[in-house]
Image (cartoon, rainbow, N blue to C red):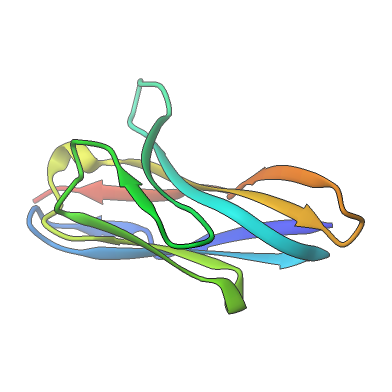
Length: 120
């Protein structure tokens, strides 16, 4: 069984910073792509950033230059450093991982979500 646990959300003023973490645990053999998505109130979930196992990153245009995705393969963890936060970044943030279990079966997993609120 595999579990993804997120941490690091909260309330921050505009211009502030937060760092999200998402750690996978359980019967894991390897992890491929890791992504961060977000779902603003009343809107659809959208891709924020992604990182391959080799460290190649992609970003949504709205966060490029402000957010940084990184990963620690030894810890099965993905991070999202968010700087220069704006009120429009307010959303529930979800991590997503494409991983292979010890039974050699590939699954895609979601974290439980972390609320990020940017407000003065």
